Image (cartoon, rainbow over the protein chains, first blue to last red):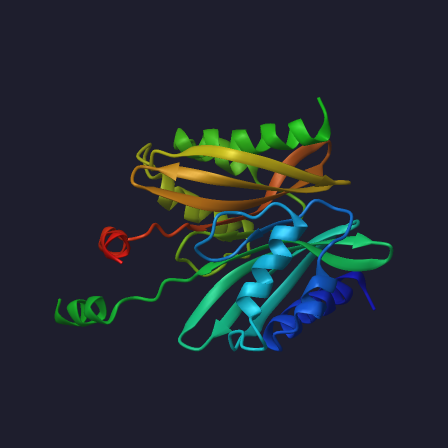
Length: 132
Length: 132
């Protein structure tokens, strides 16, 4: 596989762990050697692996994490680092995400996750626009 | 300077262009060779240099862009790619940003910008909490 498809496979593995609320698999995706950062929507940035894995334990719960699907992913690879921009489709909302990956011992692992809302127009604003 | 301080200098130059509404300087910061992406808060991702520079023209206006200050920046460098996570302080709001940089012809240039809100607790929620 090309580096690009390897990175997209790593991105898919991240969302597979997320979607199946598999904390062990999620832990496995995160870089072991590189410095790591995680910016969950509405949180301040987490800067240690311990904090990040603990945050995922809270989010994924006991198999009861959110229903999530990754769409429109594109990968940008430069040497042993890459970033992916994609959409995260949740029931009732779509988020945009940036995921940064690093190649450690031949494996692409995530070292930064940043997800945030793509605001939807409010119904009342849509109604107001249709009146103008 | 170390790679890390070079990357932080490039990140500062990006926010200097932003804060001074200098479209020429903003254009200059963006990568020429690498693929580029930009995720402004509340927008869908822009994937071409032309769209991105045009978006900055709209945001920066005729010298009337938003008052913005970058804080708490930290850089993570791997070879010729790096990412910076920082806060963007605007009047009345703080955003979190991920900026990805690439070294082209010896210069660190931005190839991805993703900014989004860090939601603040609402005053009514704070009041409710203090009652419980």
